[in-house]
Image (cartoon, rainbow, N blue to C red; front, side):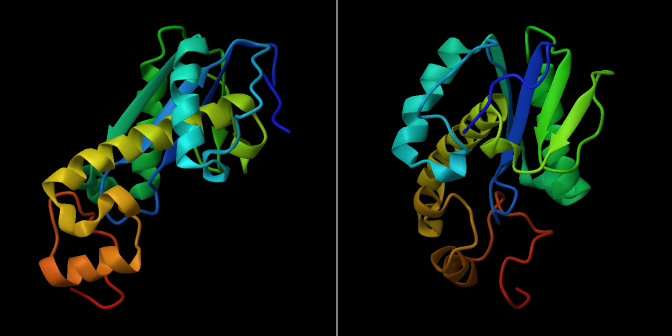
Length: 194
């Protein structure tokens, strides 16, 4: 069961989506929920159907004290690596919060301090804390919408279905059509070199 605020401080949860993809941005969200926020549907975004995530997104946006979402594009990912790009996306999402958090809880085990705000990394935090689960839903739905949009530009890669993850169909399309400006060149796009 997800639990609300971890501390007595005004707390932001943050998480990212798309870290393991071959194409598209890595996307992060940060959100501050009201202290006693509860929602029976909310869970780690990976445990929810696309339909449920899309029901939750407007509800979270409406109920949140504030939230922010940031995309880091593949060129930057290639330049600074996926871990640093994920942290950069979280920092940019936190910077968008119109109410400054007093404490940040982060999904995962790596983060860099931001703005002198105390933080805590929590492994599987998206299945433990409301605000991290909410951030995971926002990050995933915003990134999916981005991938649906660029799918129109390059339909042969099936991004509407695979969202840029390394599926068999995505890899076969890379083999057949080559790479696009949305592909991460620092990633192993095919099992053997291109």
